[in-house]
Structures are given as C-alpha cells and as structure tokens.
Length: 303
Image 1: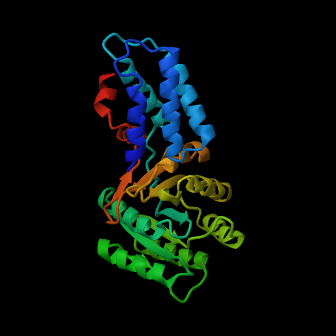
Image 2: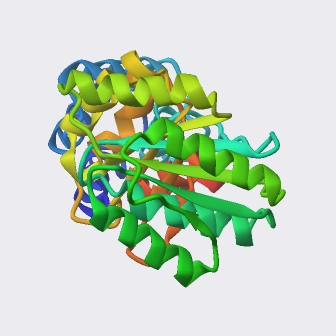
Image 3: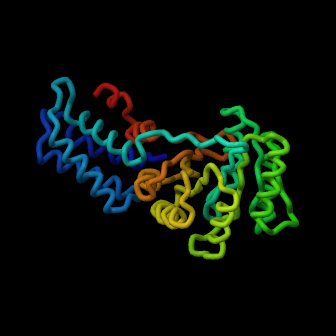
C-alpha cells in the first residue's frame, strides 16, 4: 500500500539531502517532485498544487534548526500537511443511542456487505456492545446470504426477510426486534447503487429519513482512485453522510482517494479495510497514515 507514492516522495526529499540550507532553488525542485508524486498517486491537479504551495511557503519561511538537516525538515513539513489533508484528528464512530443505528451506503461492488460484518465484529469485540446486522439489499439474494454467512461466522444475529422487497419496512421491523432484545447497535446494510441512478438514490435518501440513524457511513473502493472521490462527492450531496470508509486499501492502490477524499467532501474517514478477513478493519488515524506513507516516523519524531 502506498509503496509507489512512498518511493517517489523519498526521491523528492533526496534533492535536499546533504544540503546545508533551504533555498528557493532546492525547495522549488523538491516541491516539483512532491507534486509529481501526488499526481502519480491519482491526486487531482488543483489539490496537488494547493498542497505543494503550502509546503513551499512553510519551507521557505522556516529557519532550519542547526541539529536538523533541511531534508529532514522538509519531511516534517510534508508529513504535517499530509495529516492536515487527511483530516488531522481521528473521528470515532457514533454509538450513542438505544439502539445506535448505523446506515451503510455505497456503490455496487464497493465492499459494503463485508464492511458491515467487519464493523459488527469491531463493535462486538472492541466496543463490547451487542449488535445486530440488517440485510437491506432487496435486489441481490446473494448479498443477504453473504451477510447471513458472515454473521454466523462472527456470532452476530442477522435480520433478513427474503419475501419483503421494501427496505424501509425491513429496517423498521429489524429496529422493533432490536429494541425487544435490547440490542445496542443496529447496522443496516443497503443495496449497492449507481450515483447516477436517481431511483436508487431516492430510495437510500428515504431510508435515511425514515430511520434517522446516528451514523451514515459511505463505503468506497479506494482502488477506483479519483473516481472514488467524485462518487463520494455525488453521494454526499444527496445523503449528507457522517463519514467515509475506504475498502481495499491493501490492494495495489495509488492512494489518491485516501489522501483527498476528506478534503473534497469535508467528512472524516472513519475506517479503512485492509484485507479480506473480518478482523481486517482499522480505525483511521490521519497522522499514523501520513507516517506510513512517508515511511519515516523516526525522522518526524526527531524533528
């Protein structure tokens, strides 16, 4: 993950290696390489330019400490700006409510059903709360079966009604059952949809209005790069969701979505999927991710 971006950024910092001071010329050269690395990682040009402009102005306005090399100082500046770009703070999922309702939305094939099960596993084992999954994809019986299999695997009940084709009535019935069993968290998996499909977008918007969830999470496949960012924007305009989940971040991804989705939709990334197994779900920490991208946590600590 991010290997390509990490290598290119490392190459950019080499411009300053061994230099005694930061100058207009060597900073301009480094910044050009950083911008190229971001563009290669599928970050859009306006965001890459704004990012590197901020890095440049900070680098030129900074006196390099005598004990720190200019190259190391540049790593620190880029790391701080990357952290800011991805949201600065870690934002936890909201589990307040009785039950707390979490609505999971996203495109077809983005990994929603698997994420719903991973989230249920996280809530059950890391947050010690009782949880129920709701199979709200009325169009794909395979998705309902998949959720039932995953629910069984993690020991979490799944509410499903194969005969019912109305997601709002399924969710209402599941909510009643959850209340009667004192379930603390209800996670509703929904049908994958296309952002351009008005009927499907209306359906998820109506479901959100009816359920009034504590948390609406938008699941996006990070391997789709800049398309993921555009889709996130289209969904946010209709759904006004609370947070983003990036799946398949362990794949051969260029990372542009992870870097810029927060900036574009102004909603926090809350989780990242990092594998197939139900345990392969991480809470998103912007600073840790920036360290990981730079592969230079020790230098950042030193600076």
